[in-house]
Length: 113
Image (tube, rainbow, N blue to C red; front, side):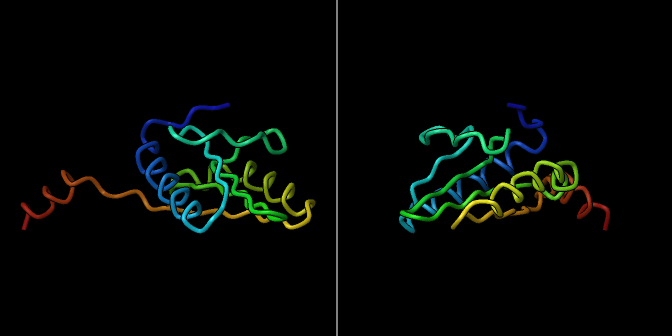
């Protein structure tokens, strides 16, 4: 399994945690890649998705991407989407989260005015 780039890790990790918590509150059994407190999801079509959520008779495969990583991972997203399309009552979702600008950058812009 490939490790995430450190630059995208904090934003990606926080969003994965938020989505997982929300799904669990909604009654889904949630497995999450690389987040303490959750079991790891199974490999799907040779890839490990960020989140696999299940309820009786339903499965959701979820990938969280930053706006930067979305374009780099199109093949992985296509693979997971094809897999879900071939399974009954299985959906695939991509959640794209924006990276927050650093407070240092915002502060320096304010000082210029």
